[in-house]
Image (cartoon, rainbow, N blue to C red; front, side, top):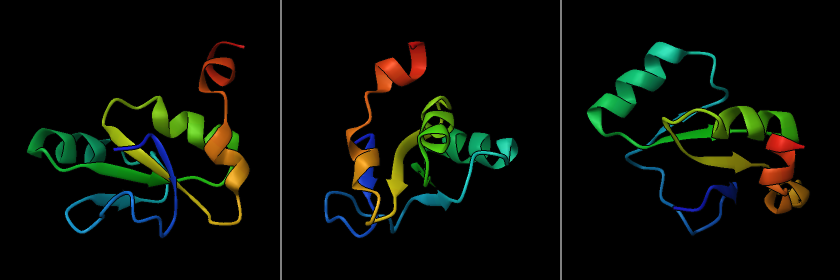
Length: 81
């Protein structure tokens, strides 16, 4: 599964995934992870992408179709400067 994908991209299927708008509900993230349910989080900024990918429970981040720039983030630079 790709780390970051645009909404509507055929690269992933979301039918069995838990799709969240952010990573604020830690109990829900952990429960889904414990049950083996893939966790997908929507993000519309570099900071939101970073926050989502920082969570070990998150399998993939969905970004808006009109934010193609988020697909090309340098995650190493974003994380470590």
